[in-house]
Image (cartoon, rainbow, N blue to C red; front, side, top):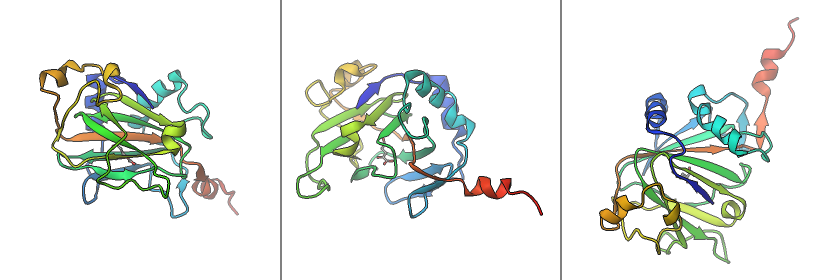
Length: 221
Ligand SMILES: O=C(O)CCC(=O)C(=O)O
């Protein structure tokens, strides 16, 4: 995993938050989700369509200058999941799976929280919700977290349903020395009081169907 604080600036963060359409949310049990440009089919196939421009600039342009996704099949993300978590909401430990090339780039907006990372256990791949994460990654607003390689294939990740992330410090947070401002958490007694956080997770879906383009391109008569 790689962590880059202040990947976007506060103005870019505000523009992204403004651009997220209010009518695309799907309410799940413990978070809200939207999928761009569309959801995958049952066979994990994406119908080819461009991402909206507000998801491309400035984020994907900046990925390109860092060489991110340069090895992936489409050389750029083609799919973005947007998750919104209120305090006390989270996501169960899971892996992102084989639909995607093994790299996910996550831009965090609005609030900090900890991502819990679990090693897959030997008899199966499910972490028990009660098990202790092997690593905690503190994601500040405007940061970028890149998960790739064995971090993608050999671990699970989740977010606890907490109002406050506790015990934050150099021993407990894997990216402590990389944070943009770890003093904020020191000054707050090692706590992060969560507000609503939105994450943009950029991915490259392996299977893309060009059916839409072919129908439009079919000659008449
Ligand atoms: O919000 C996050 O940072 C994690 C999202 C996630 O795990 C997922 O969309 O699969």
